Length: 529
Image 1 (tube, rainbow, N blue to C red):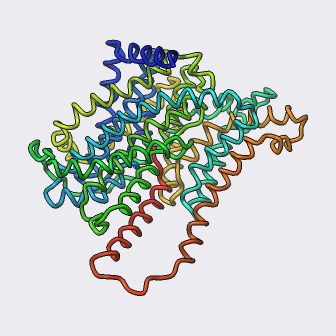
Image 2: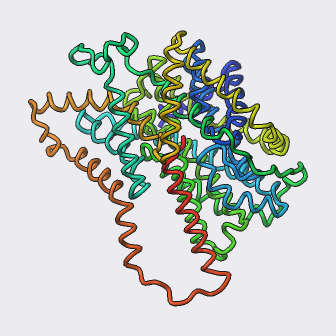
């Protein structure tokens, strides 16, 4: 216990150094602005600004990038509530009740609810984050190559296993595409060039940053061009005041959302988007007046906002201790770790205590900064959403391509970003999710390495998996995740249809549920970050 306390103290000393304070502040400010921009999100923001951090110390760079991550969770709720256009996929659920509240003159209360719920959940879940991270790390020390391979399969299944039907098949296809991309370049085992087609640029493989910038930034700009936004809703500072009744009403949803968000966020690849949908569905079911949901209910804002911020923290548990991304955005951050020559995994907390604990301690600092900034300034920040899209998106595209060029200081990164921008646009148009592709790209080479090591352990016989109980359990969990949507559909078909429906009650609830399911399907195709 003393060791954990010493590490926590070391982390806060690192996070509260003047330089890291500055970079944390810069990250949360940039994250708030990026989160407000419709169609971007945390994964895009981290990918865009990653090249700008390459000259910094790894701890300062990662604190800044993490600040962008959870800053986006705050900023996205502003556009979700005021213009019904979420800046991040995790805040789509917030629009279900946030925008109706704003249309009825309660935009201030909706914004204040999102800030308070985000701060409370984001702050409290830092305690289990610091507590569970060493436990996960200790358990992971018992993982050999077979268990690590099974865990990566589980991470893939966590992302593609919730869409159901056609979208699940598309998720699996994108994961396979990402793994295929990861095989381009020199084979680490044999030293032979694979799938380079004689191109010297491909000997080092397909650059991770160019793919991410193309799939997220360039593709989203292409998708958003020509679209207009809803007319913004104005709000004032005095509208942010919350009554005691409002605070009591959101206390339960905030607590439940925080718990759900943290538990779901720890699943490799699940992310904040899934957590926010789960939290919203729970609040709708436990509410005494479920008919209010979808028409303007504060619990419908508090639960999802608490969940997505708690999930953002929890996503770092598997990322730091297992080297498996907890979300689409942490997949991008995992790439940042690799760029800085760091390899998260079972030994990371022991080998890099200052970096690991300093990063976790910075979450507390970042949440304090976000509360101080967003609570009084949310109405002011909302006015920035009135910038003309014809001016906004060219700037985003310019910054994205500069980032792609800066990675290696050559045009190859730009062409790669543009090529994957076109691919991402086609994926977006036909409902193919980007997150499984990113996870496949990140995990592909690691899966190949661990599978080769497993084969060597078994003398070329892969039935060694049947002698590893932990690996079998992980494979079973992956299978459950893949089959869960079909099982849920089968159970729903077996339920008897209701004979009658009272007016203005369960009918509205059912309509809201259908709307939520439709939004979930749409999000599973687009993903977060």
